[in-house]
Image 1: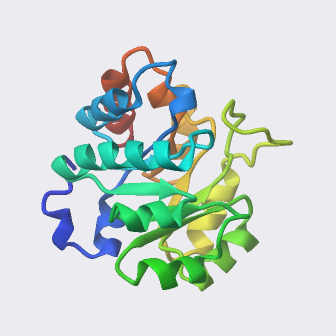
Image 2: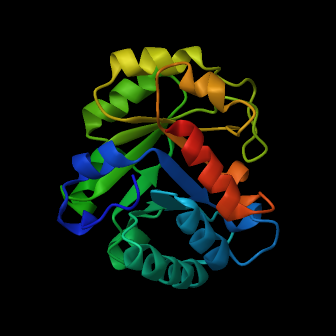
Length: 219
């Protein structure tokens, strides 16, 4: 897939069905480079959906950053998903929001954003994933699959849970957590063609090249 050409006219299920490479952008994990620039490079490399995650900026700063990122993603016809901040997602008319396990419940976020917006949810086990699906989540971010520097964990989930998720859930599942070119074959061996990636893209020396290679391997 090149770009989600005309994605504005697609329903969210059709959008998600086309997304293989989901890039999660965090200003604290881009080697002190300008986040707007590295997001643009990731999109040029082939990222098909972008999540903006920022745990450190103040409200005003985050809102302005979101507006700038959304300007780029809209121009390139790439859906922008906002991590946690349902209010900001609504303010900038982003394509959706991603909710952690301890964030606002999916059904409450749906009341705020409406039926047409994408709402993703994190899950670290199948039981939670099923609950989020029942609440109305449009996709699940399942992980962390491997050891990751972006989140403190006791033990990674491993790849077998991806197979179980594919059997148990009807909505798309994006494995996340420590995924990179060296372990991507383990993900692909489960039969999935979708991943969500942070460091392997945004901490890469060449963001375009890293993104392009991940997508090439997925295809």
